[in-house]
Each structure stands twice: as C-alpha cells, then as structure tokens.
Image 1: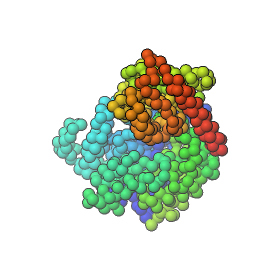
Image 2: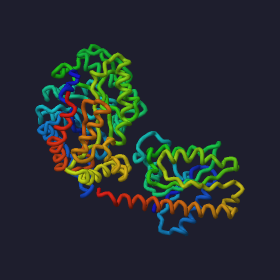
Image 3: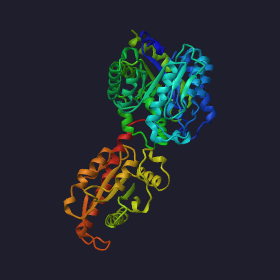
Image 4: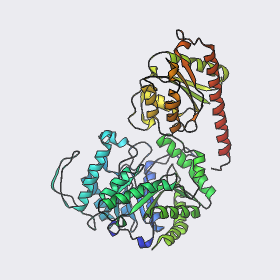
Length: 351
Length: 188
C-alpha cells in the first residue's frame, strides 16, 4: 500500500470528486459561468483540505454541460492552492491522450503539489471526446489498453523503449520531469462489468470502482474478480488498494438530504444521459445496503461501513456537486463530512 | 398522454394499414391524447453504433427522442424469417437499456400464416421486458387474409384493435396514477 501512499492503519480514506459538470440549477433554471464553476471547484478543494478530507479529484468530459475538459490544468491550480490533501484525476481518459504528455503534466503537478498527485486512468463513459480529439470509437478498448500500458511503463522507467499501434515508437526516450518520489500512484478506473476489473487485477494496478447506485453487493463481484486476477498474475492483493466512487449527499436529516439532492441528480441525469431518476428508485436507495450515499450523516456512515465490510476497500470518494448544486450546499456537505462522518468511519476502520 | 406508434418495417403495407386503423381509433376515442405515428419506411434510420440516444442526429435522433418522450408505445410488426424485422430490432438497439421504464408498450403483429402466432410472445416480449416495459399482455395477431387492398376486411380484427387501444390507454392511466400517488408521498 505504501507505493500508493495509503496507510491502512489510519482507516478508510475519504475523498471528494467532481466531474466538473456545468448544469443549470433546477430550481432557478440558471447556470453559473464556467469561470465561476472552475473557481468554486478550486475553492471546494481548499475546504476539503481544511476539513481533513484525504483526497480531491477532478474528471474530464468533452461535451456540453461540462467545464473541466482541461482537468490537469484545474488540478495544477488546486495543487498550488492546497498543501496537504492528496489530489488526482477522476478520470483521465488516457485513450485519447498521449501518455507521454499526460505523464509530463501529472509529474509536474506532483512537483507543484510536493508529492501529492495521482492518476486515475479511465476509458470514458461519455464518448464525445473520441470525435473531438480525432480518435475512432471502434478502437475504444485497444486505445485504452495500449496507452494505459505505456503510461504504467513510463511510471516505472525514466528511459523508455516502446512501440505500439497508436503512437510513434519511443527509442531511449527520457520522460521528465520525474515525480517527487520517483513514481505516481496510477489507478485503473473500472465501471460496469467485471471484465475491466479483471484487467486491472492482471496488470496488478490499484482499482477505482464506480458504484453509482443499486445494491452494494452487486459490486462485490468486481472486487472479488479483481483480487482473484491479481493473485493469479503473481501479485499480492493485500498490496493493491481498491477505491469506490459514487453519488453522495448528506444533510441533518435523511428527508432533508433527499429533498436537497434529488432535483440536482435528476436534472443532471436528464441533461447528460437523457433519462430522469425514478423517484421510487431514489426513495428505495435509503436502504443501508444500497450504494447511493444519500442520507443523514448516520445513514451515510452506515452505508460506508457496510461497503467496507463487503469490499475491504481503502478509499471511498464522493460526488456531491452534481447537477448545478449551489456552492453553499457543497460547503455544507464538506462541513458535515468533517464533523460527523470522518471521525466515525476512521474510528471503525482504523487498524 | 403521449402515445407513439412504431410501424416496424420498411417494406409492405399491412402493418402500416393496421397501425392507421389503430391510430384512427385512438383519435376517435381519446381525442386529448397526443399521438405520433412513426412509420419506419418514411425515415432514414441509421444502425445503432452504441452512442447515447440523444446524440443521434436527423431522422435517427427524431425517432429515438420521440420514443423516449412517450408515455405509451404501440408497436406494429410484421414477421420476417420467423422473427421481428431487423429495422425494428435496430430501434431497440438505439435506445438505452431501461428505455421503456414507466412506459406501457402494446403490440400488433401481421403475418402470412397463423404458424407465426407465438413469434411475438417468444421474441418481442422478452426484449420489451428486458427494457423494463409494462407490457399489454394481449396482442393483436392479423393474418394476410384479413387484408384486402390496404383495408382490413375482417370485422373481428377491428374489434380487437379497439380493445388493444383501450387496454393500452387504461393501463397507461393506471400505472401513471399509481406512480403519481406513490410519488406524492415523497417529500423530495
């Protein structure tokens, strides 16, 4: 776990992530400027640090209703604005980038942040960037696998010799600057079926698992498949961290949390995915066994601990700014996390 | 209530003819319903390439978005090679997995022989169920001999189409009301 800068003795890590979505507030139908949104994200990272939250990350989506396409630039601003919180991408779509360039950017951010930076590499659930950046969607899988392998290789070796299908060969290529501690924690983002989890296990890289909703037990399959694949490939699963990521919202009471968050999650899904969130399904998700982390601090604690019991994961990251949520409510969430949720989950999971 | 009809093939006239009768019945009995009949023969719909349904342009985008906005969908299909036509299957492939959640879907089928009666039961219903439709269980099966020069000549078929319309509207109202009642109990 040390290689990934995780100390399990301190208990499960809690992080916050944003996709940088840029959606009108469902109550006012108004949308803040992209500039304000980006500045609020940087501000939230500062609040998260003050709250003692372990990790903050920013994702990229290249289409309408998003602002952090240049997520590494936003992360570098966060690196400068903070001092101790770990930061990362969630995720970097390595398929449509040059891994050399990504590594240069992130090791630079690591130097700016004094060794706090991580990369979570994903395959993209929204695929607008393939057209925009000039890639063929039919190469979706192969683009990711090849470029992710190269990214991992650059992380291990300062001088790289490599050839592949999607970029020119590297011959004794020096990829610099190097990160502060020689290498970066690089995770594989996994969603959907266990196929991708198994690939993460085979490569022996840590896994970031999206658990947006539905019974938490559904994701156990991917967790088990990951560890099993890692073991078969000669890695010790005990050295490989697992993180989960999903929707989150907390308020003093469960009713308040649902009332505050539903309109935002709903409009976000309507605009981005084209379907609303069925109210009944949302109401059912109050069950502690459901992965949707919406509820009172006590409920959320119970859900996180339930998942921890199931998965034995090392980090959970929460998305709570989705769907045009006003910044004050984001800040309020961070405060409740700091005062009520963090102390409890750390207490129960520290070894 | 938004009712969308899909005439699922781009060849022949029987399914289209039956759909026209059906939509005439809706217009007479339920004049307040907002109806759209999509005859796939009139649109140039591309094959599904896996993108989100909202991202299709032109005719394809019109068809996917219209279907997604519906409260009730009536599907008309002929039988091709002992199954539904590829054109209709493509419509399902263009839509998300839960596309028919909170929608009522009913079916009419035209076929050259009564031997095809269970095709819809065994091949169309499982797709609709997978996509979370509330299915009107009884469908109208119409044979070649029930048509004469783009008209339905079997009075029994007209009677059954009327009933299909009533079942579709009634089930949609029922589910909508139950859902609304349940949702009114939530304070979010």
